[in-house]
Image (cartoon, rainbow over all chains, first blue to last red; front, top):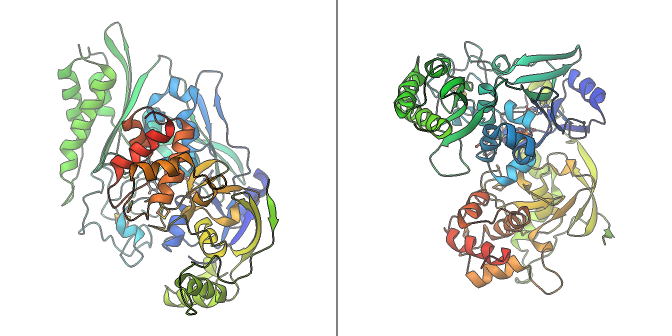
Length: 326
Length: 216
Ligand SMILES: Cc1cc2nc3c(=O)[nH]c(=O)nc-3n(C[C@H](O)[C@H](O)[C@H](O)COP(=O)(O)OP(=O)(O)OC[C@H]3O[C@@H](n4cnc5c(N)ncnc54)[C@H](O)[C@@H]3O)c2cc1C
Ligand code: SF4
Ligand code: FES
Ligand code: FES
């Protein structure tokens, strides 16, 4: 690890001022400290944002949820409002990492976490994300865990977050505060696909701080849940995952929000699956047909072709779990 | 109650009882840490070259800070290199070698301790952030001569082989019980999945936690 200076920001103004001068924010530290130790990251100064008043979960007037950036994963997962309104969020969180890590890691840090691509973490390997222009060792290397959707010839790494998949499905908003004031971004615009600039991962401006993630109220109550498929039963990143939220009224599906994890360079919304469901009556046949649309545009690599079929089955099973059978 | 203790001298902490006049492994490590700069600077020279402006702070004196925290009821004030993890502070400076360094990357749980009552991975915790924190390690669990019920349960159930993961398992298990995640063997397994055991003692670890939780 390279040396760094350390300051604890007393308040938001102090944090933003340090951020503007190149300070790097540290929240739970579970991504940052790990990558600094691997010398993948080497900030010259750390700004501890833990004293900032961003640790609250508020049920908004309209019935949505505003989750402060410094809310810990364990706190968000256990929160009554979260569990009642959006089980998909608490399930995605409780299926993430470990109890210890969830006690440290924050919601803001979670959506900022970096890929687990082993070449990215190995500073002796070629990696465009770590070093623009260096090449991508995964493209022709061992790429079993890599993405099949949203890839480019520069980078095929997945975004590893689970809760981000739920946020993508639920059309969350990311609230930001920067030197030029506050702004908000739809979750879908917050995380960037690699394209020709895989080192740019979020639409954050320099020194900008995430203050909260807001999940809107949905006009019709949603039944929701998260399914994660992995190489071992727990404490492992997803091979594939599915966040599903449905509203069934009068025997017909009125709303469908579906996104997949473990397969995309960003959490992958599945609009074709959603369209297939709207206006239909739940049935085993329907879930299977809809899930067929999950892999539209998939481009498997040498070692991850299995994810195509696995993703369809993951989506089908989670549609059935949430939507039931008739 | 917490007793004040001055910054520990940089001499070998808590020597193991064994040994002759030859320096023990722990004493050697502690001494090399004391020479400190040498070891760290050596690592830096061997590593990739300094990285321009961002890491320009590098070179001579690595930035450090002073921090006061309570460990197992004893207050310590230490001056540390900002890079020091809580795990290294405990093991190399305070002589508390219960928490173990397995992966040093959040992936095994051997380093689990409680910070302000919550279980965390001490390898990913920067010690400099812990001003006024209360830390409990496996060494802080027993009351006088009495083992913590979970420590006793690990013995009763024979829940270890090599023992390397055990301190982390026990601290994590204490938190798991406090959190109330002991409703079934499956629940215990899920909520203890952050602690790996390479000897594969999972069945007995789960039983030990059931025993201490009062389910058996
Ligand atoms: C062994 C292991 C297993 C894991 N398994 C999973 C898993 O299964 N699923 C999953 O989803 N995740 C998993 N994780 C990742 C974990 O969830 C993330 O490391 C964590 O959520 C990051 O949050 P943090 O608060 O610790 O972030 P930090 O490490 O503090 O910060 C991460 C990044 O975000 C920036 N940042 C943090 N907060 C803000 C803010 N408010 N505004 C602007 N920038 C900010 C920091 O500057 C840094 O660049 C795992 C991690 C480990 C180590
Ligand atoms: S897939 Fe992306 S992160 Fe992995 S080596 Fe290639 S460029 Fe780097
Ligand atoms: S040493 Fe900390 S989790 Fe492995
Ligand atoms: S007892 Fe050997 S690693 Fe668990």
